[in-house]
Length: 138
Image (cartoon, rainbow, N blue to C red):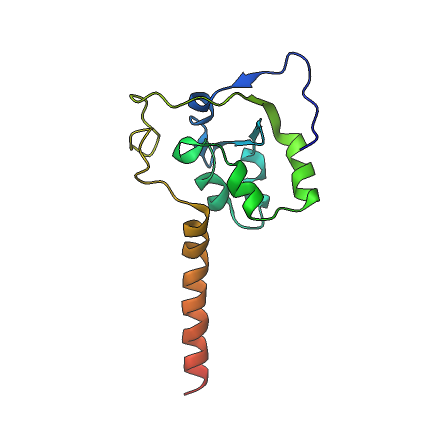
């Protein structure tokens, strides 16, 4: 991303970003930048849950790979600028820090990958569509 960092920009490490992973307080680390996307959750075309599941450095990493993998448009990438809060400096989660969902911060238990989250969203719709087709063809 070609966003220029302002002199004196705030910096956030992984431990701090990981504290913001709820519907009411949602931060994402993408391409070395930190974004507070809380106000965007209701507008996200894929639903707020996909964003929240990848926020707060979920799983002990930033969300860059998942963000780029989905193939966001230039417009979507440009929209990030209005949610910018600072620079992401990386780091690791302290072992004793607990995530808000109750699992150990360094643990991968309870984390959801982007593909799993998409499958959870699409599979029920697919089953419903098949049930409707079956009922119509009886």
